[in-house]
Image 1 (tube, rainbow, N blue to C red):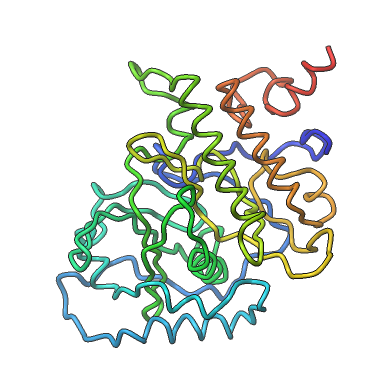
Image 2: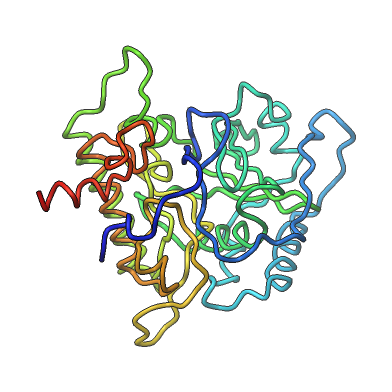
Amino acid sequence: MGCLHCIGKPRKRLGSDYYSNSPKHTNKKINNVSEDKNKVRVELNGRANGNKREVNSNDDKNQLSLDVKKLKLREDDGNTSNVNKAMTFTFDELAAATGNFRPDCFLGEGGFGKVYKGHLDRINQVVAIKQLDPHGLQGTREFVIEVLTLSMVDHPNLVKSIGYCAEGDQRLLVYEYMPLGSLENHLHDLPPGKRPISWNTRMKIAAGAAKGLEYLHDKMKPPVIYRDLKCSNILLDEKYHAKLSDFGLAKVVPSGDKSHVSTRVMGTYGYCAPDYAMTGQLTFKSDIYSFGVVLLELITGRKVIDHRRPEKEENLVAWVCQCSFN
């Protein structure tokens, strides 16, 4: 694969993703399809202290099934029968778990929406709760695909899905809470006094991410192309054990001998493989390219795109390629 600078420069500076230190998400997704104007509106004001109503435990599953039919998802988008494995929660439960989405429970923001830390009394567990933003870069389709994908996976290097809420217009995902946040927070823009992570820890994180990717590619049946591997999607537990997260862009590979999947181009600038960005032909190698970019970040400590550096050094991959030929 060629160097990413072949595709040109982004128009705006890229920011951070989930579990980010930055309260605003500015990380731009590559998408050659216009946003769905019919995305549902999400009411951000919870009803934890309001009038509660009884919700049938099957309501969320029924609503998710309607979403699947409405979006006309095919079998190669995920096995819809696996939805029954995930727990369903009412919006009231999740609002109560986060103190009605209090600012001090806020963890970060990404293309899907805001992420909050909460405690679910029903399972007595601290969790991360991600709420769909109707004006965000992802929508109901990505929500459904993430629920379906996480219902299929089971690996120590993939974030564990606990359940979801699809009540009325509300769309929320519930995950295990990762106390150290994302890898991005430990590599870039460190606060004064915070020491960079050690070389051994960096290699441990890289190995963990590689194992998670290997599981998706080689051990899942059918296999899955992750399509959004980047530092902000690698979450860390208290021992720096790495887990891949955010599967809204994941693509299930159909059975057969197809060498690629033709699909709309989606991903994050700087991490997206140039051949996929130019042709729309998605392969497992697209994920391998993204992993290589993450590895460069771990080795150099540089951001994938950094406009504070000289022009020739702004793009990490282009800079490394330039250095290798000098």
